[in-house]
Length: 140
Image (cartoon, rainbow, N blue to C red; front, side, top):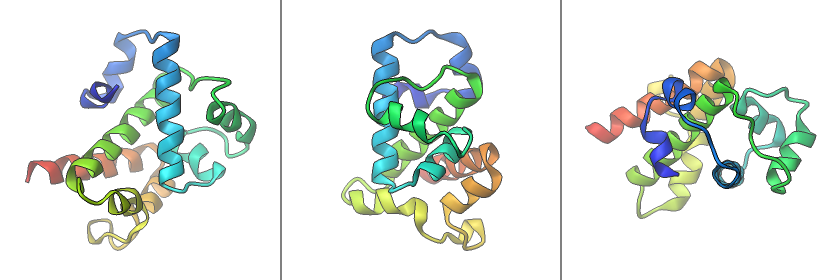
C-alpha cells in the first residue's frame, strides 16, 4: 500500500474503492505506526480526526475487529500519515529510532514545536504542513 501515499490525498480516496483486505492492511499499518510513534489513544484520535472519546473504536481497529472508515477526511489524514512515515523512512534509512521519534522532537522549521504539536494544534492542516515539509526535504 505504499503507493497510496504517493498521490494527493484529497483526490485519491474519491477515485478508488478498497477491498476488505486493503482496508484491513491500511488499518493495521496505521495502528502499527501509532505504536512506533508511541501515541496515546487521544493522540491517535486527533491524528485521525476522530472524537477524543473514540477509545472503543480505536481498540477495535487495533485488534483488527474493524477497519478505518472510508470517509474522505479520514482517508486524507491516513494518506498524510503514510506520507510522513514514508518520508521519514527515506530520510533516515539507517536509523529507525530517529524515524520513529522525529515526530516528537522540536524542529526549528516549526518554531521549535515538535511536528506532533503542530499536528495537534492545527489538526488536518498540521498533518499537511508536516507532510509537505518532509516531502520538500526529500527533494533537496
